[in-house]
Amino acid sequence: MSEPSSLQPKGSPRPIGEVASSLGLMKEDLVFYGDDKAKVRLDTIEKRRRGHGRLILVSAMTPTPAGEGKTTTTIGLAQGLARIGESVCCALREPSLGPIFGVKGGATGGGLAQLVPAEDINLHFTGDLHAITSAHNLLAAAMDNRIYWGNPLRLDPRTIRYRRALDMNDRALRNVVIGLGGRTQGVPRESGFDITAASEVMAILALCEGREDLIARLGRMFVGLTYEGDQVTAGAIGVSGAMGLLLKHAIRPNLVQTCEGVPAFVHAGPFANIAHGCNSILATRMAVSFADWAITEAGFGFDLGAEKFFDIKCQYGKLCPSLVVLVATCRALKMHGGVKKSSLAASDPGAVERGLPNLEKHLENIRKFGLPAVVCLNRFAGDTGEEMAVVLERCEALGVPAAIGDGFERGGEGMTDLAGKVVASAADCKAPFRPLYDWNWPVDTKILTIAREIYGAEHISFQPQARKDLKTIEKFGYTGLPVCIAKTQNSLSDDPDLLGRPKDFIVTVREIQIASGAGFLIPITGDILRMPGLPADPAANHMNIDKWGTITGL
Image (cartoon, rainbow, N blue to C red; front, side, top):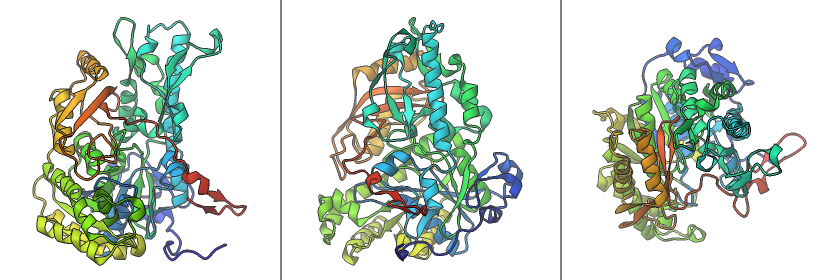
């Protein structure tokens, strides 16, 4: 075996019972999964609540293939706060197998700012995503079974948009025909698969208040229309209780730790480009209940996960965040400034400066919610002093506190400057955040507001299916739901090739899906897909496990 890297965490993780004890949790509050992870029983907040900590959201500029390190920053910030003597806890999402074996290769942070046990968390963990997949597919199977046995609900198969789910990137399953093979094999119809992270069941788990609310939300899921044009919900199919049974343990947040022993609740894993991109309300509530500082993140750039965090999750969960940490990197700024990924190694302060309008747009967006911001310039090994100075000087000119984050190489020690600025800035936050829009506004107005205010779009183009969907939404009384826009993560626009800060663009809405169980509407924009594909050289090609169980490439 090779010598361990200098960036591998030193020492052994604390027993998870000891980590729980630091939060005021007792053995009876936990369901242990070995010595290094546990699930937390749902009644612990009522029994053990210590107070109400400040909630800090970590978001980022528009992501690029160069990487931003949002999760690494989230974990590093928590470790930095612990280093300066603060009581702190993380609340993060669970990784999906699709990106792990596709592009990312892991989603637990990196270097000296990562969650442990990283290999378990990145793979099957405590089985939550498999339970969500099974619950989702139970409804799909039961629905087609109802159609096969005489279709007593008169569900029109042509109107069904509820597809099957799989926790893997598989473009071959995006569009399929099911029920082939003769009369005994089912009723043929077009269908397809979404990745589990895009499942409405995933969103419901992330937004529910408890088991009773979970079952109720599952029953409210919109699955299609009858031949007469009436809606059919999952409750009419008759398996929402069984779906809840499959989620019996998955509803409990998972407790692990960072490589420096900071407690971390890791629960639920919706993507922000095709879902709402936040960990569960239950896990976040536990974090703010048992620590003075709760550090959470929302997926991709501020225009996606953070907007949904504020306008959907905080509204449902009655959460009041205090501050946003916006992650930026010189590498990403250079790409937004026109540099190709293959040329990023060369120092180019001019390109960094040309990319700054993207960062500035996200800072403007944070102010729209009434919150202060702190910029974390996440340092990569090849960054030069001249490049970093460009970013820090612009932040100073804008009146935004900024700090260099060095969590990857130095762990919490490299994040104490950021931690100090977060503490000082959060103390200056006098008013609660304000949402961007009122849920009672017309649906098209809500979509246009997000597109104009957050993305910078000129207008919205509703395609024929989307206009038809607006009529269906109004007919069945779903106009009061918030909107969860599915959009590319690679641009502020719906065109992934428009980098920087694009202007005068139009966002195209192809269709609007009803996620009545989760409690939001999903406008599908541009060419966004809810089932990703694998790249030409997926990360899985470089992973292995030897006879001693040592994993490489993850």
